[in-house]
Length: 206
Image 1 (cartoon, helix red, strand yellow):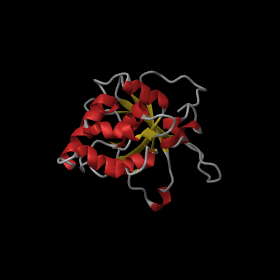
Image 2 (spheres, one colour):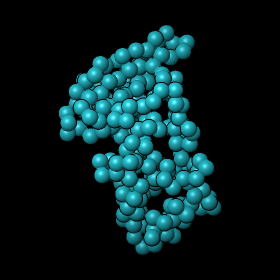
Image 3 (tube, one colour):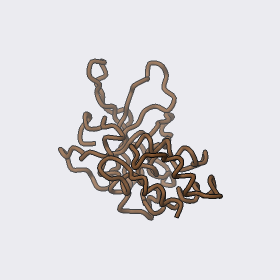
């Protein structure tokens, strides 16, 4: 995220809008928006920017200022080394670091593009891999007639917004399905003009 203000872009906005480009992103620095996974009452509404360095597997966390709250922002956690075996953060997953657990809410455009350009390192950023997973889940949930079941879920909709797409997936994804990052990957690859065509979802039955 180019600035503290940029870091508060919503997930839906990051999918359909051009990101601010005030400052060039470091190619190997992945940036995410996060919150406490189980916040105390006084921590409700606090948001953080996680900067993950894919080269040395370290993370730096800062808290953007919040207008009219008295929160000035600043560094929450200085550069902190993670276990090299720990995978890069994924949107929709949790990250435990230095005694804190964060929900990863979103990522910036440069991060999505970096991961999508390296599908072997980041399989959940690979559309074909994600589509294969969703196809397998749909067939397992609706073995008799997968296409008819998906069509029934779509109803008369010829396209879905992102929230409706997540609700559609919830009908057949198992509890151990990949996090929201996979859905974002599918959306970014198959979506058009801010919606996802129904035909892209019916192809999961093919």
